[in-house]
View 1: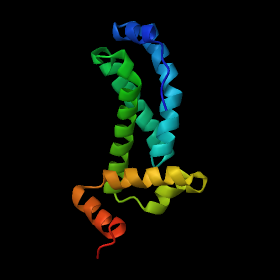
View 2: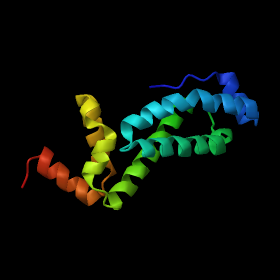
View 3: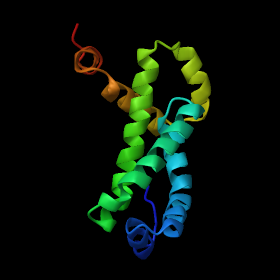
View 4: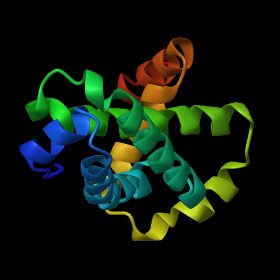
Length: 141
């Protein structure tokens, strides 16, 4: 996935042009929403991740060193926001069935499911992640 935004528009937004910034946000929002809907557990988490990412975009775009790095940087931001929300959810001990219902698991492809599982394992504290890797991947007792 990538976000196609005109370099001149990004530069204008970096310099404080609010109209350019609004256009950048409008162009980025659909791609961020699509990404978040795949990698956030619930629909409300996806919307929250998009909003938080757009706030970060608004605040930190002027400090972005390279316009060419914009797309990768923004996807790192949305990925981080999705992971933060997943950590919050699992630390609040939300029943997994409720989380899965909102995620519409039945429509996921095998690749999407594998990515979701990988992200979930990656978001675990080191000690729990190590146990899962040793038990399920290296087949140790």
